[in-house]
Length: 149
Figure 1 (cartoon, rainbow, N blue to C red):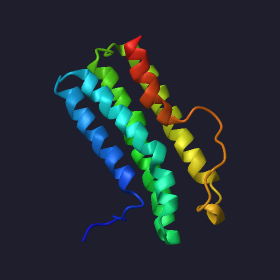
Figure 2 (figure 1 turned 30 degrees about the vertical axis):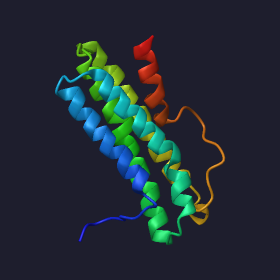
Figure 3 (figure 1 turned 180 degrees about the vertical axis):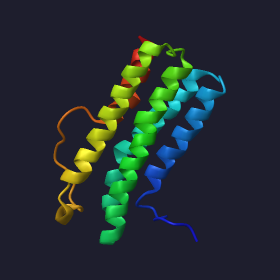
Figure 4 (figure 1 turned 30 degrees about the horizontal axis):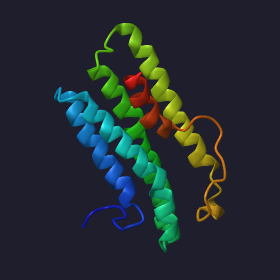
């Protein structure tokens, strides 16, 4: 009926995406921006555990590949687009903010794409031992922390 994988191996990814969309709504409708930050942090926690939950599930190779791609697409929405929307709705709307947003978006998408390509296709079932650089998910904790300070 629906395209995609709809089982427990990807449920946390979908929940994180759900909270990001709710947070975007809250940011755009001028509700309390702290609720949008809360949604960003919940998305970050979901992303922290989605891979662990997926690896505990019995999955076909197709489901594993789908999960890898879905995670990157969800990370783009949750940790690249959503933080930019929060910052825009906090008043960072000057023309000189645009290059910073563009740089952030380009760096985030490029990093996600790089690690998707560099994943060893024969080794999708084992977790990646380390990544280079700062993951895009870090914005889920850094941006709220910066707001508090």
